[in-house]
Length: 454
Image (cartoon, rainbow, N blue to C red; front, top):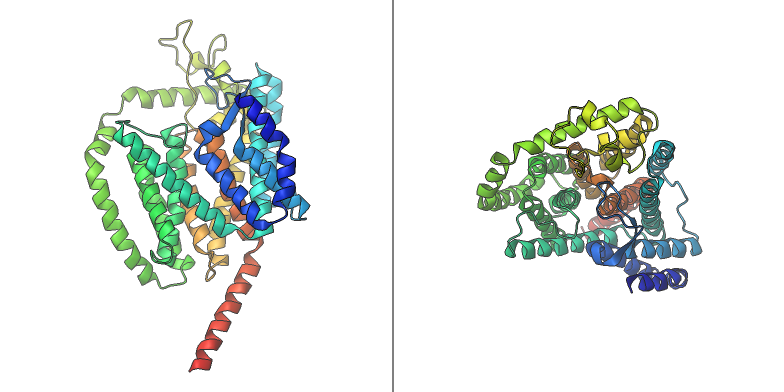
């Protein structure tokens, strides 16, 4: 039944694109629908060629309502003549380079169907990126997009509360795993913290509430890496917001941060016993497994440095008859039915599966957007959008550092979330001059009005 509904929705994508292009408000509702589909990913996505027991980064050819809506939005933007292009920014070009450098790994793969599942995922997340990027050009919808993220964050918080009441130890909300949830909450929380610091609680109660929800979700996950990175991420946001992003004095930013910090410490104190227990009593085997799997990834990179062992083929190559695990010293308790796990860092996973050139391209792609955010803090100083890059800079830094411990930036839902932020950064970068000009004109008009009244 679910597949029949999907095919009906697929057939309706083209007519929906024609309808959406008639009114920009309808396009905005479609974008909100795509974000809502993210919040309900498990019930709005289906898998073709599903391999749920496979230990890899892609377990099926996943298609979500979010992708169908993205295709309709992209078609509507093209009909309105606002298609952003296939590679609308240097960051998009770096992603395409990363994508192309992953393709040679097909030649060394044991199972090319698994390669296709990962390739399909990369195509779909890029489709989502192009849809959001083109819509931002067509509708100037940055504020609407951020507000949709805020409602998504609040929805995720209520899912965490429901799981907490039900006795779930590490809830994951709308996401497939608590670590993937925390990574997204870093992005959302830092952006809404920046909004609060720069604009004040009264300026946007929705963003203030979303920040509290994001921070609570991150702490309640009891993820050690996430909790350790929160002070760093929030500290970067506070520094950038206070120095450049805020159109107010640094002292006012500080005064807004103090009560927020006190409230955060009180909330942290309430959960402190469980957090301490999580740090002190975590199984020692977890750290040992991470190290052993990292050594396995290094052995794969030594064997296939240029093309890797095959996209999404880690789950095959880590197990017999291949000997990478034995070469890395991981040979105990490996019976005939044993299935080893996946290396818990996205960098080594990409290097092992796709080769060193693809790893370098991915790192350049990631850090281009971090660099762009820091640069935009200066470019957009004094504009109404200045707080967005300041917040995203802190969030991206936390995500990239957490990725040394987790591979969740290869998970489909997290990639979609990151792609939406990358599209927002690219739009801000492309329009920074016009945004500064509009802010200067508005400030001049305000000063002229004040002088006239005087």
